Amino acid sequence: MENFFNSQKLMQKCEIEFKGEVGKQHGVFLYDYPEVAQAKQRYESYVIPGRNGELIRKENAMGNITISCTFSVIADRFADRIRDLKRWLSGSGKLTLSEAPDYFYNVLLVEHEGIEREVKKYGRFTVAFVCYPYEFRKDGMEEYNISELKYNPYDECKPIYRIKGNGMCTLSVNGKTMRANVGQNLNIDTEMMTAYRIDGTIMNTAVTGDYENLWLKNGDNTISLTSGFQLKIVPRWGYKA
Image (cartoon, rainbow, N blue to C red; front, top):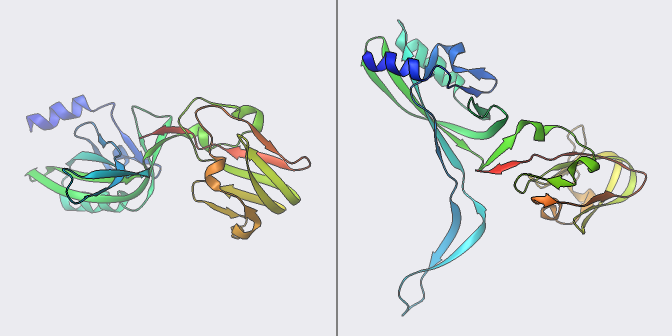
């Protein structure tokens, strides 16, 4: 039990928030700091007969990252506490680490890695959060005007462009364009690579162009939209994990 009390003292200020809830709401705390496995470059390797070694062809994509967390659990009804944790730590949602409260990860799924029981009322429960390989800033999920996004101090990001108006318009980002037929409103999501109305109706046929051309690079950016239309941008900025 000495390890339990030492860990409790060490981790008093370390916490995670997942789907809007924190560990203390479930009667647990982190046994140790979360371990973040960095994203790996995707690639293919192939062999040329008669040549030593393998050749590598990199893909323009990164793999997911994994954030492992071990919780200390102390409870009279230990099994019930574990069941409660499994309900909370499942599915997808936003994950925030207390040491970086202005950022979050998009969790794709949660894997329950194991339970280590030391005594009747105390043990440890380990989970792995499989996340999209990007550390998002919370303020990057807000709407901005064009003038506020001329400079991106973060890594390349994949915004949502929200257009209001009627008729054909051209959205231009860093000299590259996308044509859009707008009927009152249209969202262009460059991460999901889809276009849709506010009510959720898919409108992919209303746009012409490449979504990748609308990403915002690190540094200076130029953004413009045909006169007579309104534009708000959700930058989704942050850092590659």
